[in-house]
Figure: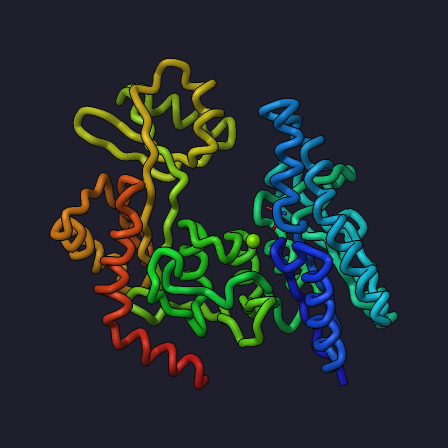
Length: 395
Ligand code: ASP
Ligand code: MG
């Protein structure tokens, strides 16, 4: 009988110490003893990528992109080796592979590369030898053999891409939260865990700031129809399953994006600014057109890059936060949501409708209350929510 093939991914907190690495090894061994073939993707130990980045920034605030990838990829290389050493010591043969050794080929976009294809033969060969295969997340190589990284949080994407290429039965993302919630539980105390969530809704949540999964990983799983499960490393439960193409809930979740910046520019400067952003790879999230000014919304960390380019054309800039509601009825609920916020004396700067979602730009200090108000009205009080989640669970 064919053994099921599972790709598991463990994040930085899960491999954050030797003690935690041995807990991870135990989980892997349990799955192995159940007769599964295992490919395990690891992140760098928690804090390690930031530490390495900090070292480079002590030298140059915008470090050479190729060399930064060489540096940052080392973080994952440490954790993969420590995990393989642990498993071998526990009597379970394991082999670690860097992105290059695993033949993960990306484009040439250093620091933010996209996986183009994976030749899985080195991995399948090891699986045939009954080895547990550990792969460094977040990294690959260009056609020429230069090391690349996939953007912050990119290990999820490595795991899903490997699961797709290997035609795995499931891709399990182990993390420090036990699933996908209707909103960040640190902000909304009674946020609910979603038993299942469809791919398009999960993609919108990730795009608009839900940190639980990296957006490209969701898109890649969706494209390859790889069932994706988010679960906790530290306690046993079934987590949340991401699958299916259709959202059935009126509102399934709220996502928060805090680190944004609204830059006001002169109306006539807009076309040039758009072009320049495109040239230096800065994504404009939104353009706000008021009668007397134009604002562009970008990530705060893009702002320093942009400042150099814009030189003097910025009228003023200030931090904003975005609150995005996702669900089948989101567009219909946008107007009443804004009214509800106004009734609660929360000032909104701007709102934007998209396919099955709406986004409200707010001053950073009121985004948490806004999230609580909308969550209470459209999720906590929604019976549809509970019924559909129960159905999903029973199916
Ligand atoms: N270590 C990388 C980061 O901190 C990649 C990851 O953890 O997924 O962003
Ligand atoms: Mg992550």
